[in-house]
Image (tube, rainbow over all chains, first blue to last red; front, side, top):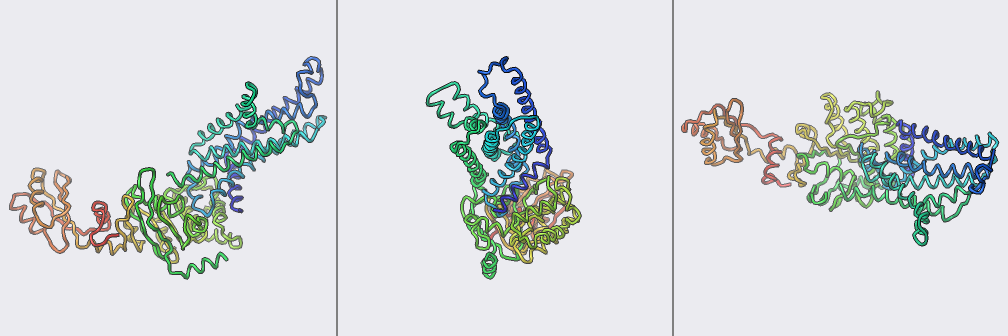
Length: 258
Length: 334
């Protein structure tokens, strides 16, 4: 079990050994910062003269909901672009450099290799989340009234969504030896899941129900509104474990193909 | 508990590695066909074969990279595919192309490997330090692997294989890409390491095999076509000699070939054009009989100008080529 952490540590520190990791950290901070500032400013604008905007078109005018629930919804779209970049190197790069061959000859199980890599990437993802706490401080500093519940549940939901997406990305990465193919493949998979959300909007009845239940964003929205439902947690957990399992099986397939 | 187990296995006279009827298929291609062999402790085994013969496949199976389609592999009695973790603890592997994480420092990488191989925390630093010294890496410990020269990267590869003091070392072409001085050093190292463990090494350099290895296995088209000590392999061909006859020009080739074919004791006749339009006719003959006087006489009688006639002893190279052609050695099947 300790070997799992050894692999995870290498994966995590490896993110900082390349400019890619550093740039992603900076970019993530920058993009989320822009979103945060825009949301805060637009709230300020609306609160100056609510009549002009027509209050009935706004679902909630409470500060936390207006800023942070939209913020977390936007984050889920950013995640769509970031996850492929975070996970593309995990296996594809090692296959391309053929460093995976040696790893397979050490006394490790496939589970330890895959879960270790997964954990390392999750650590990096969590590391990206840390600066987001700064926005809370800024929000309070400028005089915002924070409702902690929805904010924390938003973080929890974002973390769960990130884990689920990362697992899908690691699985796609394990299928190929090209990082570009891995990134594009992961993006496609995530977009397909994203599209599930639209199905619920254009159709109704059974299909809407099925796709609504499968849509990660549908489950995620509950978290951004401050609802922590066990169903949603189980959904993301299942999503994560399912792709982790697929990734392990995919790594095992070296056993029956060349 | 673990140590007790290893100790009890040590007292067991069973071989270090047992490769039992191993076959490996890639789709329809049969890369290894019913290969069996054993390696004892303290033995250095050379693996010879042309490209695509199945050397690397055999080594990859032995290293636990992938399992065979059929058959069993045991290391110190541990079945590779029932207890892969236990079996892999006994081996160190140097792949054909040494690919290491370019973004890690040498010392950082070796520590990473030591942790993965489960080297005990107590003698952790001493162990890693020792392997670095042994492979001459003392000076480059804090350099990035990606910035090292090929020779040094090869050494890191060997150090990586040595970590954890495995009972079996699998070296896939360990001396490629090294300068002559390094090659000698690495060979010395391999010889020194061979005392208390098993080493299996594949190489293209035939003199290296006769220099280092106690036993040679020749492999072609997925089969072991010969195995034995270098001396044994030489002796089973010792009654064979090569003869080269060089004639002056191509116009005599037909007549010369006809004469030689008619001569009893001539085998494997080949002709090829040498420099200045001369024709080199080569064949094998038995050691006991010297055909040279007869040939000279015959050729002179038929008016074929002989410019050179030479008898050569077959070395490991010729044995190798002979085996590849014939598929086996008479009286000494694998």
